[in-house]
Length: 474
Ligand code: FAD
Ligand code: NAI
Image (cartoon, rainbow, N blue to C red):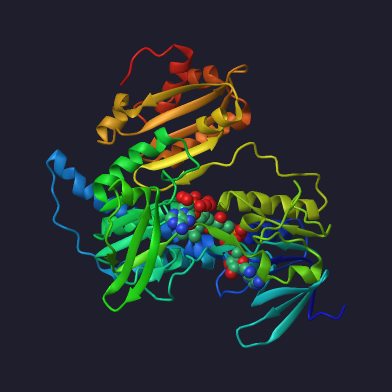
């Protein structure tokens, strides 16, 4: 055609959704072009999301564990933090290895990477503008939109380097003395955990009456308790009334129930830095979708069917841009489905549940139906919770605040939901997710021999509590 490059499949955006779709399509024998505006592949997740945040959370964990071993008679001196080394480790040994690996895998598979900002110019063409202004046009038979999302800005906040989004917080320009986190969701609490361990006095302000609102309260409580001890303050049902950047710092005043009941200060406070983590918005409005006839809603989301098809039959969309939950593992699964559908396979997105994990300390992990949701929808459930205070392993690592909860369908006794709070909850949840997908019931979990002493036993113990077959607690 009249394009610079013509291909069977073009993928717009190289995050976990995009690179997975591109690689799968290439593996299935299709000709693939992958468009990414930034120089490295991997999108938000690898460059400024999941991966760098987990690297810093690991460092945070090492610091807090060292602090806490004093209780067992082993004390370390205060950590000396060399920010340059920490930043370089995160950027080169962690993020750089992964993004470099992706570039090599793209090459190996014959995926053509075009670097620049892509916009649809018609239902069969995308124009890509490079950093140097040069435009490359890509003609395609099928397209997969994987353009992701970006941080929501705080309305009315001044433009100032000290008011950051997650990308700024991960850049770790310095260790502020006092930091305010606006939004008590997953990003705010994960980054709050990092800065707290590094020595910052962290405050969190959340306008709802709880942290991580999608999760059951009994699972959030142990995390909140620990944060209340470590952080300067957690202000719930509280809003930011005014935020001003001055030479001496960021001045913030609060309003709402928190101020009325005394859990938030009446006077304006001074912070060295502010992290805005109030959610993310999809990039649907920035890709020229209208030129391709792809429908984008007011918020920037693109609606798709179970095969990830948009309203235009040969154009697909995956990942954060198609809706909640905005999680990397959802994006990768959707990416495989889109690529396989284009290759002619009869598949659709069929996962029963998508697990969520907050990599805080302790971690909070849940999947499937929550108790709160069951109550709201009038679904009859049975539940069993096993307190980690009765786990030998939890005692031996001095972290007994955890708990493992299973939720069962009242009629079939099958596991339909699970929630875990505690050290390594994110890893432990996987067994429960498999149980849900496989239609396992309490009996199946109770009869499965779990190694002792492990935290994974708490899943077996919770199932045995439901069955009434639990004999000893250790
Ligand atoms: P993205 O990763 O957003 O990638 C989209 C890509 O498209 C970007 O590289 C962008 O530059 C590119 N792009 C967009 N528009 C254009 C255009 N017009 N032209 C060219 N390129 C374009 N999820 C988890 O599951 N676990 C976690 O632990 C986790 N931690 C996170 C921590 C942070 C701080 C953040 C911000 C997010 C985290 N997430 C986590 C969410 C996760 O990063 C996203 O769900 C995931 O990256 C979405 O993948 P995606 O493929 O939809 O898009
Ligand atoms: P979020 O939606 O998880 O949390 C935002 C919080 O901010 C909510 O509790 C909300 O009530 C609150 N809020 C909104 N406006 C506010 C305001 N004006 N003042 C005070 N509070 C306000 O969004 P977050 O934390 O920004 O993360 C975005 C997404 O990134 C997550 O939803 C998740 O999909 C993804 N993510 C996933 C991670 C993981 O899987 N471990 C880690 C980090 C991000």
